[in-house]
Length: 455
Image 1 (spheres, rainbow, N blue to C red):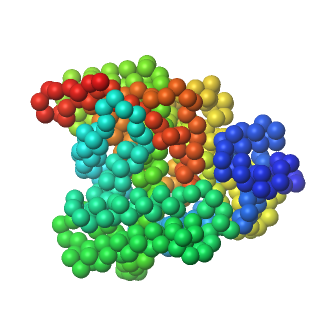
Image 2 (cartoon, one colour):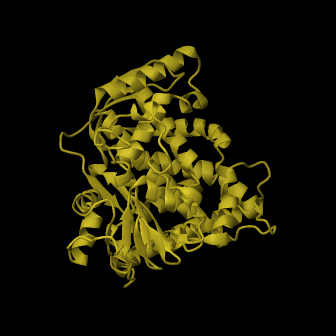
Image 3 (cartoon, rainbow, N blue to C red):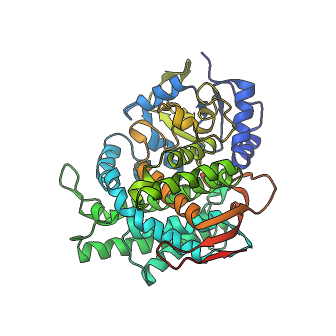
């Protein structure tokens, strides 16, 4: 068949629609053009978009030899570095993945749970009572603390604060949506938009390289943070990761592991606070678990309705709308004969809205994940196949720990009746105004005197 149909729009219009209202743009294309469609963005290969489970399954079944995810992600190298696992394909990708996977094994998550809850407590204690504030901003702080302490293994103090401040400053500059278009990344000096972003990025790179050098110098014996495990790891040839590789992997973990997780929790609370029945069921589940014994991280991680709520948040409002591959040779996909160099995209958003898999798909309904086990071609917020996100277990675990602690210690409400819109922050899609909420009640930490602060 001919190439998938494309919208009758000038490239500049399609680009603006993609940057400003990506979900509405995909909905419109899907409605007018069908299950497969294509569009172009400046400086990038033509993009063919699919969401049918059979096509998604076909794409994810590829071993990485014919469909190149690293090549598709290359446009992000200016943000994450060209030595990140996201930029690699074929043998180099497999080498990096083997080195990165062990520290994120599911069994390690339990030891991180206590720190995640403690850091959430710190942020809860700093929330203003009765005044509107951005929940997303506070969640970003929690997630960044988690990465710097659990992943980097940096103890509280000046170095940790310097890294956190530098990362926050860098992301505030580098996540401007137009930078997703390569032509917008022009360094015209330190006062130009990209020039400012590059200089902020370089400062963060310097701090990360210093931390890597410090870990190599001091040694990793007795340490079990992710950075130490990566410094000590060796590939099949006995070779360690270079400083530059480690820096780019840490940068990727910072962006993919803290921005995305904080945004996912924000979207979960957008619905938890809007639908009282959901909040009540979550609190009931936590109360029932507490009645049986201590609410340990392991207990919280196994709560079924909490797990279903987190998964429904990832389904209903994907943090990243697509995952893609570049064809290394011509191939027929979804009935279309696509040439080498074409981008094949699986739309997370459209696949998660297919009524065959998700009846009443626009409804936020966690029970659907209790009633049915979704296939990897129907539910793939972390991508799929050999390119599925290495930090998936870590992200889901953190979602549960933070969400549970917020439910246990706070009573919040949405601060405005205005509809919550989608706003783009580089590759991630966040709630408008950072999800403005109001704290109505703050309960003391577990084990502290039983005081309650309320509006």
